[in-house]
Image (cartoon, rainbow, N blue to C red; front, side, top):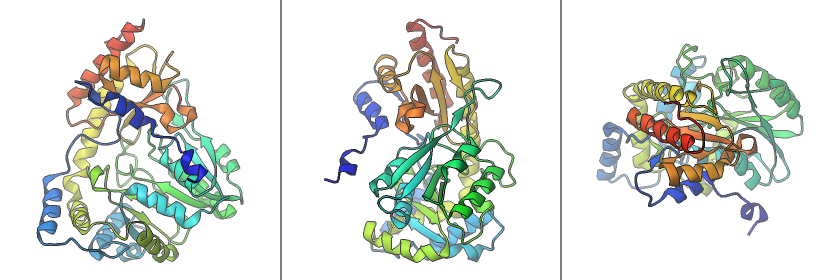
Length: 401
C-alpha cells in the first residue's frame, strides 16, 4: 500500500456516527445533508428514464442536454458571458467530490505545493495529498470580540503571502463548510490577481453558492470567482446537485473549467467512472429546468432553521457562535470542551444528540462542533438545543433555556 494512503485519517464524523449506530432516539445532525427527500418531479424523471431503458453509457463529459442546462443555469447566475460560452467549459462529474478529485488529478503532481484555506471539509486537504502534493494550510481567524464574536474571517495578507510561484494550486471553499465564512468580491479579485502573478491555479469549491443568507448580491447567490475571472484564467469551480437541489445520494456534480482543460478532464473521467449514470443526469436536467420550485424555498427554509437554532445556542453560557452567512451549519465552541471528538461521542451517548467534531475539519477547529441545521422540521432543532442545554447543565453549567 502507498504510505500516503495508509496514513489517511479516517473520517471523525463517521467515527461519531458509528458510535451512535443502534442507539435509540438520537437526533442526527452530524452529516452535511438535509433530512428532506429529493422532490417528486426529480425522482419521477429518473424513474421514467430507467423505465425507458436508459441503462447504457453516456458521453464522458455528460449528456449534452444536461451540459446545456448547466450552461444556462451558470449564465443566469453569472451573466457576463453568453449562455453558449459556458457549454464548452462544463464537465459533468459523479458527485462534487469526484469533480474535486478530478481537478487534483488534472493539475497536481507528486512534490507540488498546494495551499488550502482551513478549516475545511477534510477531502480538500486529503485529495492533493493522495496525489503526492505537499499541502500547506492557511487557517481562518476567529473573531473574539464584538457583534461577530465567533465568526471565522480570512487574513487576506497571510493567504497572499503563502501563495508563491512555487504554489501549484490554491484550494478554498466558500461559503465554507463548516464555518459559514464567505469571500467578498474584493477578496476574490485580490486572490485572483495574485494567483495570476504567481501562475497558481485556483480550485474553488462553491457547492454552497446558492445557500447564502446575506442577500447583498444581485442574484441572491454568494460571491463567485466566476464573477471576477476571465474565461481562460487558471480557475476551476466545483459544483454539486447535492445541497441546493436536495440530491446528496444521487452523486452528481459538475466542474466549470477553462476550455483547454475540458477535453483532458473528459479523458480522466473515462479512467475514473467512464460517465455519470444517464437516469441521474436526466433527473438533474429537470432539477435545473425547474430549479425555482426547489432552491428558493429551500434557502428560505434553511434561513428559518438557522434563525431558530442560533439564538437558542447563543443563550447558553460557554457557547461561542456567530450567525453563519452561508451554508447549512452552525459552528460553535464550548468552553471547557477542548477534545471535541470525545465531546461529540459523549453527546451521542449521554444526550442523544449527534453533532460533528470540529477537529474533523482541521486542527485549528479543535474544541468546536458542527451542527447541520438543514432539518425538515425546525422543532427538531429546538429539541436538540434542549438536549444540549440539559447536558451542559449536568456538566456544572446552566442550560439558559
